[in-house]
Amino acid sequence: MAKLTCEGRTIREINAEIRRLLKDGEAVTVSSPGARHNLGVALLESGDVLFDGSVGYYCAGLIDGVKVRIKGSAGWGLAESMLSGEVIVEGNAGNSAGAAIRGGALVVQGDSGARTGVSMKNGLIIVTGSCGYMSGFMGQGGKMIICGDAAEAFGDSMYETICFVGGEIADLGNDAIVAESTDEDKQFLDASLTRYLPASVCANLPDGGDFKKVVSDRKLWNFKKSEWKTWEQAL
Amino acid sequence: MCGIAGYYDKSSGSTGLIGCTVLDMLRALGCRGPDSAGVALYHAPADGDFVLQIKLGEAGHSQNPTENVIAKVSALSKPKDVSTTGGYLRLTIDGTLDPGRVAAAVESTGSEVEVVSMGRRLEIVKQVGSPDRLEETFRISEFKGSHSIGHTRMSTESKVDLSHSQPFWAHGCPDVAIVHNGHITNYHKLRRQYEQHGTRFYTENDSEIIGVYVAQGLSRGLSLEEVLHAALADWDGSFSCLVSTADAMGFVKDSFAHKPLLFGETDGFAVVATEEVALRAVFGSELKVREAGAREVKVWRN
Image (tube, rainbow over the protein chains, first blue to last red):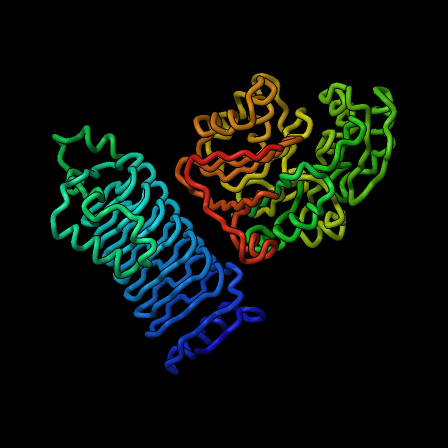
């Protein structure tokens, strides 16, 4: 276990040092992150990185394979464009958590802000608490599990992202519908929650079968003049 | 960009070093706005008198009109505790006077003279440059009080000078101040409406309209919560906005959550900032914080 403090170092120096230590096969603990931006961006090595405190914007963006744990909160754009790997934040996340991810798993153990999972292409996002306005917007693939409530315009203009919500949905976005869950969905939910969340948290969550499944109604996929009303409302 | 910060002491005391708290938050947010820095600070009421912070002119532009201002104000009531710091004239005056008349008397002495703040508890100081420079000029770290809001500015559409800096006093409405991060995109339309009813605007900064809007809402008898909820229907664009009054502090965030704003709260205080870096710099790692949601309004009041 290698330790690294952020104090007295620039972000470039911190990230270069994390990379070097990961290459040496070390698990890295980063102390005093102080909610600074761009920590742990573009880590392409495998291994474990622990941020011992809150991080700022774009933490763990563009990572490929590394497992990141944040013992605090995260700012905007957490794990943005992650290719693969795992990002767990023990506190809350700001807006656009998991934006445009192509793989991997992002777990927010608190609440996440607006536009969670915006334009995600693949991968998995789990939010133990609630998510903010327009989460899932334009999601193209992958799965998003919100254990708590979803704010307004949930799942707006999605392609093929599949969402599950354990609590209340304030309001569905354009072209989003609640679909029937399958046995496969329930198995997926139970397996994902058990894998990524502590048993004590899982015990208080709704049963896999009680989550609402939200998908695209596909009305906005192709423009049809005869459905002008739908488009007028969406735009 | 721009950075905003606010601190509210829930203990009803006015002896906390709030100036130091807000200064340190602004220092942490300084990279979001290098153009200007300012704070609105609320101290214990001083015998019901109004405290005025008066801009005498943009640096190097006009001769010192201190005596003219004092002569004009004396015609209404004798000013007390007169001092000058960093291009500002500070004085206290009978708090039963009509604030509009006091401001009009002061501002009749020159086109560059402006009442930057007036209130029984409120004082605003702001200037071009960094939070460190603000501290050098005004020693705000020594300021004690109950609550404070602050701003570091990155100008996007209007000029960089003292008057265009934030916080803005809600002209004519004692003790009300605002800071804003974002753009009010229907500013010109709203401004025309207000101007048709005789409201004077001091700057070309869209954020100034927020002070005008809040002042008019409060003067119509709305609570701060009601004003901030009403703003969601009346303002277009992006805004994370903090508003403070003599006894309250609140925020409103726009319908699309375009602009960041985090807050945290304990039994003793509430704190708000654009970025968590400001909260961690001052309050350490334990404080739980959350990003405010779209259309979220919150007000703290003792």
